[in-house]
Amino acid sequence: MAWDLIFWVLCFFINIALLASSFYQLLSLSDLEADHLNPFEATTRINSIVLPDFLLQAFLCLSFLLTWHWFMFLFTLPITAYHLMLYLNRKHLLDVTEIFRDLNTEKKYRFVKLAVYLLLFTVVLFRLVISASTLYTMKSMFIHIDFWGSTVGGICKLVIRIF
Image 1 (tube, helix red, strand yellow):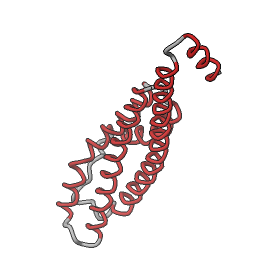
Image 2 (cartoon, one colour):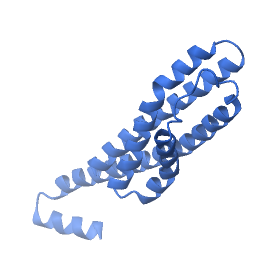
Image 3 (cartoon, one colour):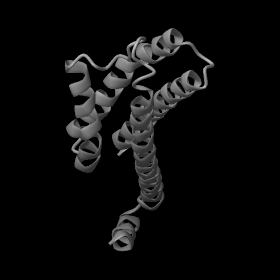
Image 4 (cartoon, one colour):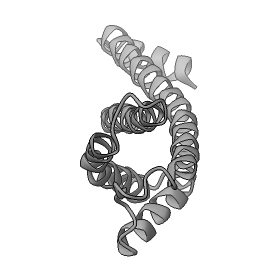
């Protein structure tokens, strides 16, 4: 039970990092569109966090697969496959000379990623709360067992009370 809670806390922090990365990329593209950043600065900022973003997403998807959380794995698989396709085709980095031509598509891509990560955040947060409450309930049950389990009659009362 404690491992489940640790897993969901880890997924929570990874998801927050992915949300922050996606928001930062979207903010940089918006600053570029509003002419607050030059194209070189914007692409340098975005390209510096693209690969860690891809690796975190792949780790999250793989961890869902290895822990048999099938719904979460299937939910994160399309974006991971898209990241893999971009990386293998060498289209994962933004080009300084073509950034203004691709600005709208890149912003839409970042908005979709942000929406997916927000939905994933709600599901992970829900599972984290359920895992923590289950662990707390089990812990209070063990305290109850220690309190009532001092005699043989107490154990019988506990078994009757649980079932």
